[in-house]
Length: 187
Image 1 (cartoon, helix red, strand yellow):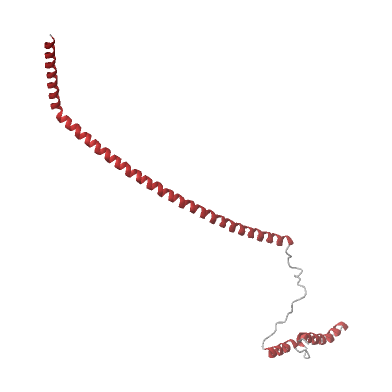
Image 2 (cartoon, rainbow, N blue to C red):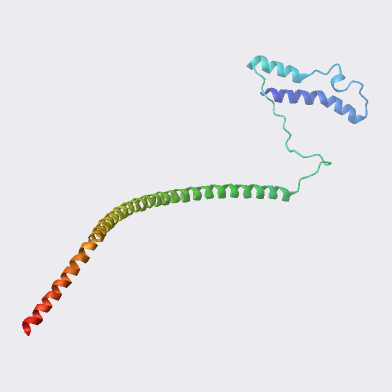
């Protein structure tokens, strides 16, 4: 036998005579807790339960059906649907953010690979440019050396120019003398 069932049974037995008297119209002077015959059975049973088990057992006194008071405002059904829709949109937005983040990560890795390839290409172009620049410097150096060589030869020719003119005039005299001799021998 459960303690709560005993309590309910005794409470009904104690309330039954008072209820009958009220029904008959007999006024009762001592009602409820003010009645000297009334005993607070709830406290007695609670104390007995605590003594037996060492802890108080929670009693469930939940009414069978919860109804809001008639003067309270009732929430319309569409509000629940609207709130549910907002939660669904929020969940979709969250999922969309996750998908976009994954997409960004994938694109970031692809761009990173492309940047590495571009860096490698830039290094190879830079190395080839350095090689070309070094060749140009070598060619420029050899051209400058050639120009110096030609300049020195021209300077030598300029210094020898009076000697050449002197040789030229001598060659012309020799030619004249030979012509004269050749004309005299033909006659």
